[in-house]
Image (cartoon, rainbow, N blue to C red; front, side, top):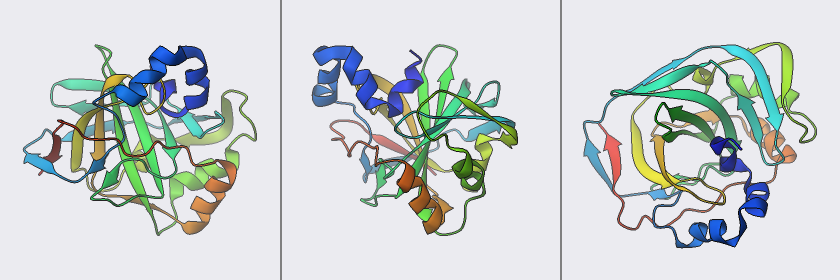
Length: 225
């Protein structure tokens, strides 16, 4: 099973990992998501997104709509290049900023050549209509039956990104069993927007699917300046 699949399929994965895998969700010290409050500001490398447009391939996995992205670009952070894999959504947003819970968040998932997993989190506030969600919402499959190609529709993960690219960074985990640690998390500081009607339509299709904030413990959250 693709490691990225763990981010939003808790019930399925828990069923096959057993008690030992699930126990890390309770005992792990570096779990995700978190409430970002105290940070250390540093001159972190910029996020160089190089995403390309590809045919729309999406799936209802029973928990969220998941958009598959093959040969759709990468994210460069310093000397490390992370290949883009897919994005999906969570309600509510999971990672909080100074206690603020966002109604929705996109998780854009990547993997480096060495196998390092990295998630970019785009939090959303309600506000303006979102053009990317307008593309996706009418085409969400009615049931969890694999990937669907939408004829004539193309999509780029760049459409998710706000104009600001400053961010928080911390080391966390997968958000569903087995809650494997060592995942790098990038949380963008500037939220994107979606309309209240779009949020209501999404929530009509999917129940809330995010884990609550986990203890920070001894971790340090870095903040770009």
